[in-house]
Structure formats: C-alpha cells, structure tokens
Length: 217
Image (tube, rainbow, N blue to C red; front, side, top):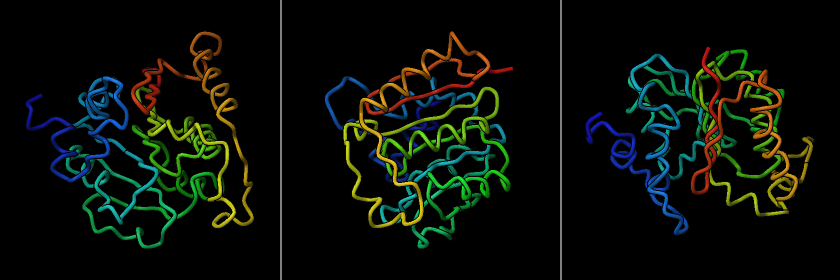
C-alpha cells in the first residue's frame, strides 16, 4: 500500500488528528498505524464492508466517518450518536443512528436494519459501563474475520459518571469501576483459551486503545 493510501494519510487529510496523535508518551505511533495491520484495515480496504463508529461528533467535523468513507470506497459507514444534530451528516455512504450506545432496544433497531458488521469502533462516551454493554451486545454481530476497536481506554480510570444524571433518565445508570472493567477485560482475554466459541482470535493492546479480532472461518 502506498503512503498516499495509508489510513493515517486519509485521517490527516480529513482533519482527524486525535487518532494520529498519542496523548501520552507511550512509544505508539498512532491509532492508524495499528489499524492498518492489527485492525485488518489494509486487507479490508476495498471490500464491501459494513463499518460502525460509535460517537460521530459533528461539532469536530465528523472527521472519523469522513475518513472511513474515503479510505473504504466500497463500504457502508454507520454512526451512532446521542445528538440529533448528527442525524444527517451529508457524507456519501454514511448513515447515522441517534440513540445511546448502552440502550439495548436502540441497538436492536440498529442491528435489525444493518444486521452484522465487519468493523466496529467505539469512540463513544468512553464510560466503562457503556463500553461493556455495547461490546457484549454487538460482538455477536461482528462477522468472522471482523474487528472491534475500543478507543481512549485511559478514560476507564474514572470511577464516577455525572453524564448519566443529566442525559439518561429511564436507563440503567450503571457505574463500573476501573477494577471491575479490568476484570471484565481479563475475562475476555482468558476466553481466547477457555471459551473458543466466543470467537476471539486475539486482543491487541495499543496506547489508549484495544483491538479485538474475531476468528476467521
């Protein structure tokens, strides 16, 4: 793949520096560097994928979904966001669903329409409970050989969540501590050996992110 075609170059062109800059001095080049190989982006680039990104953030220009639409020219791109302003982004091959990532009835509607995904990127609320609920609900709908990416895991250090008090009336306002999140993640890692039916091929830890790959058939 030429330099001009790399995911890093496409993200840069679309103005998304957050996936290219490392928040801490960890030695990691950038998210895109790992997405190319561990995330299977390179091998999937020209396939007919269904890609979901949780967290669109139009106020910053919806730069991620713009980049994915550019980088994956034959793919359908979907977004999940809580703000109605992000419902119609006007980007080719991009559709946004408005709802909360931990709302299972809402996720059911997304799954009913789209069915299964080849790539899911969780760049949503970054709260532990949301990450866990979304993964457990959506992982069965990742196709064989697909990938599930959790970004900004430095946020899992937080034990409280004021966000719920304002925006999620009627939903389960669950708080998951760092220790509980770490235990959940360790169980996913153990399942590679003890529960192969779960379908995890491997888990790659990068700076502020996790890449979970599904077994290929």
